[in-house]
Amino acid sequence: MTNLDVALLKKDFPIFTKVMRGGSRLVYLDSGATAQKPIQVLDAEREFYEKHNAAVHRGAHLLAEEASELYEGARSTVAQFLGATDDEIIFTKSATESLNLVAYSFGNSDSSNRFYLDSSSSIVISEMEHHANLIPWQQLAKRTGASLSWFPVTEDGRLDLSNLEEVIKPDVKVVAITHQSNVLGTINPLDAIVKRAHEVGAVVVLDACQSVPHFAIDVKSLGVDFLAFSGHKALGPTGVGVLWGKAEHLREMEPFLTGGSMIESVTMTEATWAPAPRKFEAGVPNMAQAVGLAAALKYLTALGMDKIESHERELTEYALKKFSELDRVEVIGPKNIEMRGAVLSFTVEGAHPHDVGQVLDQYGIAVRTGHHCAWPLMRKMHVVGTTRASFYIYNDHADVDALVDGVRQVQKYFKV
Amino acid sequence: MELDSLYQEVILDHYKNPAHKKLSANPTVSVHHVNPSCGDEITLNLILDGSKVKDVSWDGVGCSISQASTSIMTDLMIGKEVPEALSVVDEFTELMQSKGTLNGNEETLDDAVALAGVSKFPARVKCALLGWMAFKDASLQATGKNEG
Image (cartoon, rainbow over the protein chains, first blue to last red):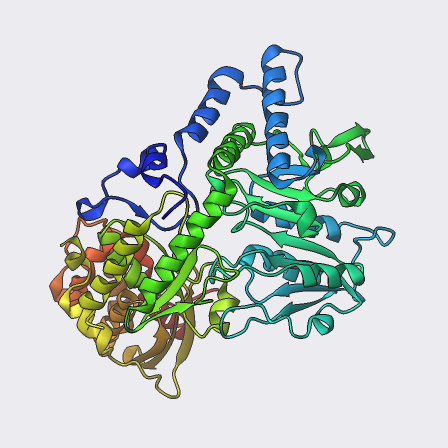
């Protein structure tokens, strides 16, 4: 039993009418990379351009007013979705930019700023980070002389928190961690991490790309200090990401990008900054995309985040069961449903992930293959790469069945 | 099935039994190439005898296309003069970039024409070229033509 009427909601997604290779229907199992878009999102974007297009926060004309209202309305929608206040929401072009914003802002701080780092500070990440939440910190450590350490990952794909206090030492300034692994599907428990981080005066930066689209998030109850997610994985357009940060932090932080819109006053030699969130939004923003994202979040809210969560949970449980019946196929990551999202990575003995994906494509099944921008994790799990199926609101049992049949075809094709 | 134009029998054979997949000692040049989009990696050792390709050996991980293509390439290159070998690399590169419009010349490319179907799958062209680019790099380094 599923809580979502998949057949009905699928009608909102024009892409599912497409005929795929071999005349197959589209079995889209790559929402972990990017989600498909409902017509409501496409309409919102189109309508912005058709009826309200103007540069926000500039100009004295009607269109500028309407555009600003829609853009700021989108900010409110995001804030409500996360349980935050409007001024804590910064629009970026992507989650990657959101995470870089935090890293570069910290790096731009002088020694009087609480976010200042030097060789006496350290940064903690985890071994299961996507490159987007790894490289910005690795490079910040290099630029500032701070040391970098990380939580290891256990053989069953969980974060090893057994020596929490040794990893988050008193000199730690930043703990940057993913909410849900994009490869393993593991959902990381945050309470102990947040508690310990705050004990030593560190801030917690959460990469929520794989969680925000899939279950209800309330930033206050999570207790983290920053949260980043991308619009396009949450049914929204590409080109828009979000950074949420606690108001007190945003006040103290240095800007990342500088230019128009983010200033309070400017002379030829000096500038002062507008308050957050404007301080972090230099240049004309991706307005139509922000408006599209708001439409996406409204769409998800109307479906119900709790229903989405239980739908995906049921689907993942079904997929895990079906995969356990396959010979010479191994699930990489937690094999039970506890603290686990709708991402299923696997290997097929004797067949490289690229070849698996190629055969599945012949049946209209879209999966992701390779190292999933998590190269260190691949090495840790002793694989060169995996094939990853990720589920969302428009997937159902028939899609899982198609995937399982597809994997059998792979084994037949390569005689493995 | 469309897939059969990609995975010709000869490709699957080379994948299962790759040729020269054991690094020879004392290479003239050794190179390591990576395909960052999928994580495929290859180490290739080249031994020249004057301007002649005496031995090409390799090791690495990758998909059937990259493994088979590298295997086919080694068979093809050993024994050739470097300039001729490089012109075969260019010919193969052109075939891979042909988007399915070329079939390849069997006289010069031999088994490598079986990879012609790869050119219809843009995401796989890099897989097919991995070993060949490693060979080209090694040859240019060995003959001192690589200014980089």
